[in-house]
Image (cartoon, rainbow, N blue to C red; front, side, top):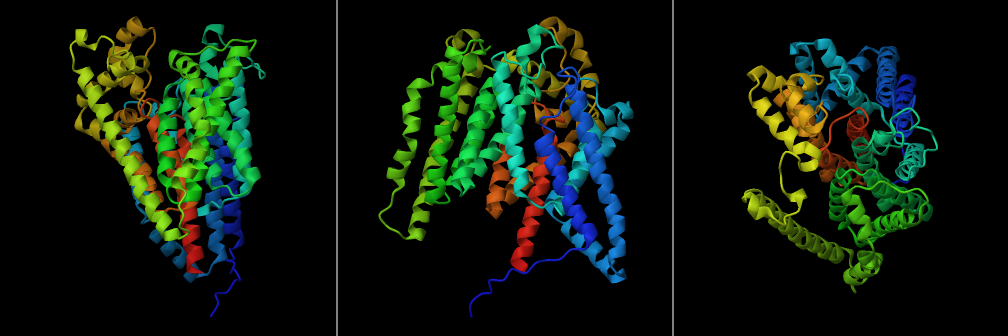
Length: 528
């Protein structure tokens, strides 16, 4: 008997249809409108972004609650019990368990803090309190039950971020079409770019959306889609270099390794991946040429300057990479099974080699950092961990962990509150001012930041959510799950040297909600 080609459509009551629509509209606002939204240039950009997220999230959650009550009238008594039972069963997913742990830690850290209102709201200059994180958890849950993918989301996200990428590139070359620099000091202008703001925040934002566009490029079938997503990659890499933040290169490296691993699923996927280095090289060559001939000079830091100066020698290899991979992995046999086995073996061989190289590099770092000062002559400064390592991140990391060890058991368990880092680090206020001319308002490391502000419980909940989602995505091995896994891993990598912020962190919860929503849709389609 031939399988039926008729697709059975699932009908939903009106409140549930509205719920799906609201979830999709809300995700559209965050992916497409939120990156471009600003008010009063860079002076109020933090307040504008925070207000946008809080108001849109409150509106979305309030609408979801109203629809929940309305939906109770759409079912009979037995139907209500069935829906509640199905909802409870759905909440058994490990992601919801970790989100519950994170939610509980946020409530406890806020309640036990010295200033609960400040903890809820967040401190001036950051505005990233427990209120924003609690909204992230609620948004994650609602999206996981109500999101439905629409092509307009992806195209809107591409257009919005490409506009932002172009603005970042123009700003790096002192071109300010939106007059964002008019209200700030000229001396600090080079640290602010696009409609995102400070360069580290720009890097974190790009490390979320660039992996998304790379994944969409790899899985796109239509030539026009590949072309448009390829343009997004070229602009994204150029914007990342223009951010002048070293964390971009860390995120980009992890992103490429992740997609390189998944590329071995088929020869078609591998050949598609081989164009990614080409696009990166085209982007970098464009910046190199633009830097050389632009009328307005760009302000490059050392790493970015050296990167652009040394592009030429490697460009010929990367431009030939698709041909090299095609010849190398071309198999005379047409048996798909044999081809997959060959690719599977090559993946483990190549990644074993990469792993050995990483281990040797880590051993080298360990070795040079325990030498005497005279024995480190000639060793690049980037490889030597000290107080001034990573724009003084070494200073704040070592002292943050030392202060955390001195906290009480309750504070170690639940933290000092998401808005409490400045008070927590106040012991080094004068020292940091005298030494660097500024005061640290966060740890410049996501793990340390959550460890201090939400404690061990919050750290387990937050990172448990992310790693659980990545594990489930890898296990599922669908197109959407692969893109989400690579995006989350890239965000984690750049988070090693950056902070959780309203500009970037909500996207992680949105993507985890989208994963659960798409996974449940695929499960329903298989059961029909």
